[in-house]
Length: 138
Image: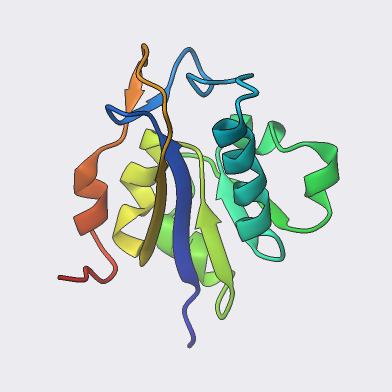
């Protein structure tokens, strides 16, 4: 059976910041780099599957809901069984550390943008996710 292509597209701050108080640390920043990053996320995931936790899926604006398949992930869902549902498709995994801890071994492509943010955070990018699965180019 054909497997899905599993990818992640995310942004981090200068020191690997991912989240703050349940949101992005730079939430609401209208500087060009931040606006372009959000637009790029919606462009890259268009036409594909986006699997993420309930907060991430709820944050997808109405304009972006019709041109990608949105799937809410729950902690009781087995990652391998969940991904089998999307054989032959590109599936993006979103939602942050708990989700990436569970799905990193299936990810073949990490698309990480480093934004010009160097403030506080309570969630950080874990570099070990990059080597837990998929193909590593040396």
